[in-house]
Length: 240
Picture 1 (tube, rainbow, N blue to C red):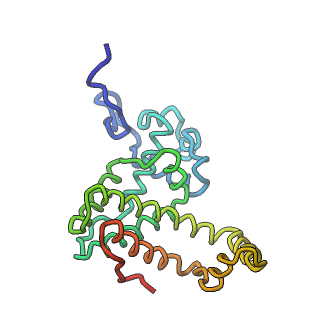
Picture 2 (picture 1 turned 90 degrees about the vertical axis):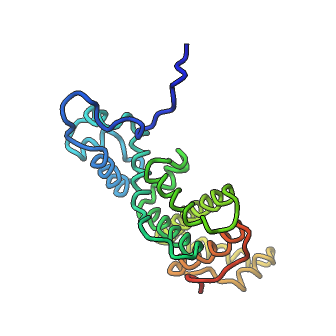
Picture 3 (picture 1 turned 135 degrees about the horizontal axis):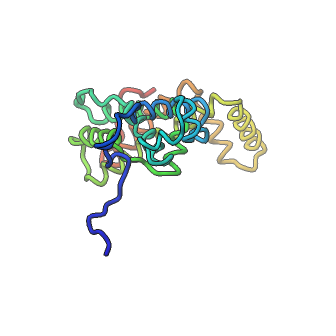
């Protein structure tokens, strides 16, 4: 007979150390910090229990005392990045300004850890303790805003998606020059005359230089978020 009390478990639903046995030599925080450094330096594919153990100067088997699997390690890593966001600021009275500020923090975290977007694509958003704190904080910012609870959750989801998208674009803009080459190719194709709408758009609207990506990010948020919550477009800080 199946146990009716059985519930899905996560790395956070288990104590970090058992009630018995020797005192642990390491902590999940130490292990996660080392895993973040490894992913930042060599990419997500380089993060294995063996490579992490080597970085920590121990054997792979010893890590399983703290983390049950690589998947659990990845969950800890994603939540640790969520913990980098500063949620201590008191709301300033304008929910849109406050939410845009939170979005800029999220984008900056994705820029610092470019592997995070791929991790979330493959495993979905991880709702660990820090991620739950972030979600609750964002909902608190939106408390005075119009809209239903569902609309507010969708707005927070859009915020995260745009943060990920713009972080990826920043990474491409600083890569090996592929973006300028693609832009030049697009302009050349448009100039052939077979795509008049594209030609008109490229003629009248210049793509922002990399330095203006953050301003473009803010403009989009200030246009989209109020519309999702039943308000018209608002201007404010970050407009240019």
